[in-house]
Amino acid sequence: MKQKPYQGMIAILDFGSQYNQLITRRVRESEVYCELVPFDIDASRLLKLKPQGIILSGGPASVFERRSPLPRQEIFDLGVPILGICYGMQVLGYLLGGKVSPTPEREYGASKLYVDEEDGLFERISSPTRVWMSHGDQVKKLPPQFQVLAHTSTCPVAGMGDAKRKLYGIQFHPEVVHTREGKQIFENFLFRICACSKNWTMRSFIEYSVKEIRKKVGKGKVVLALSGGVDSSVTAMLVSRAIKDRLECIFVNNGLLREGEAEEVRRTLAQHLYLNLHYVDAEERFLARLKGLADPEEKRKVIGEEFIKVFSEEARKMGEIDFLAQGTLYPDVIESLSAKGGPSATIKSHHNVGGLPGFMHFKLLEPLRDLFKDEVRVLGRELGLPGNIVKRQPFPGPGLAVRVAGEVTRQRLQILREADKRVQEEMKKYKGFKDIWQSFAVLLPVKSVGVMGDQRTYEYTVALRAVTSRDGMTADWAKLPYHILERISHRIINEVKGVNRVVYDISSKPPSTIEWE
Image (tube, rainbow, N blue to C red; front, side, top):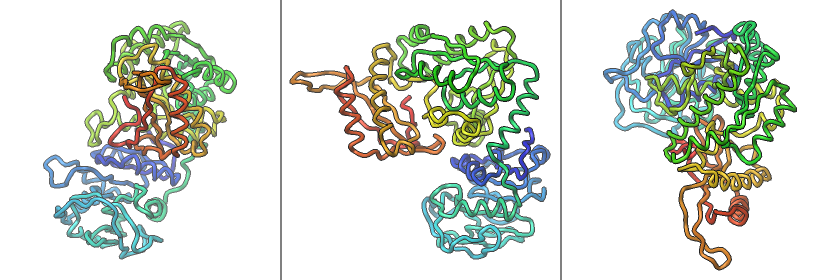
């Protein structure tokens, strides 16, 4: 764990809450740097981060369980302010001499919070105020030296604190939007209790990152897989600023891109990024490898393997290369850590964070691994990237292969490209397009009967998917106006040969995912 040069760092101990990333985001939105760390981190490692505050996250466990995750007792003796959220509050109560008991029924949902003590954590908080509860246990007896700060009709100790030692606990979740004044509660902890400074900005991040890249790379060369998406483009711009023309970029056309995308990406990159760009047309190779495959994970695996082969072959032509730069983001890091056995639930299986195949003898360079997606967009603007790159909707690494449900064929790809082209054209005319996280078409391996021009048809079904989100970790289906949906459906059915039915996906994430595969 390397200390970042941001005064006022907050360490968030991960007890497995589904809202952990939201806690991290809320702290950073207040321009304070923070990191999610293992719940059982020892005090010496924690002190190396020089935290000005510690947050104990929520989690699905109960402190009564035999193997419930508990922090090391010594963290309470560091003299650093601590805020426990939900399970984190129960940990405080349990380990510091209070009493925690199960509630007759699990409490989940909105509740009215009444503030008993305004000074400190609940400064400038309304009483009552709406908060979001999600718990099965409660602190029934306060630890020594603590006092009740807030309560609800069903939770007598909904907030507690020891102002002298700066230890606080709240039974609700201030990080979710359902808690009306959650932002103020976080800011009270960060600035009134921890005395943090507002210095987490993308401008400071650029200055720090450029120095770190130069220091790490030295006189070496770096290669990067450039897709034209936000993450890889921002990574390229940042590394290029640090080491200039010692960065080589490879753009692999895997034949799974959208209509005209390869040409558009090459044109945009040439006009704005001024990079050493190597273009590889590998469409035939990828389609050959995908022939006969229908399982989503198999398709992802094959595409990943073939990409590494193509990329490695091209990189070898460039002579001695020392580093591989990747656009790994902070959610990728968190998810990869949870997959290794942490208390958080594993969400994705296809990230390869912090590791490379044995035959790729590069050192890894991941300058964005501390950032969320929206922070990357802000960083891109600070670096001077054009809006069509910074605002570009996320596009899956396996491309259209995961939007052609089932086997990928040249014909199915062409049908999907034509359908998706109509989706993009109509969505860009929509006034609310700026609020859409992703909008695209999916070709289903389902044929249905239709009637066109007095003739019976038996053709494919296209599903429309449009979601709103802040970071892609959770998403809600977009409530598009009927006339937009009607226009898209009309154009696809009438203009795309092979499709006679269009449906709209109204599933949110969770329980669904944004992509279909």
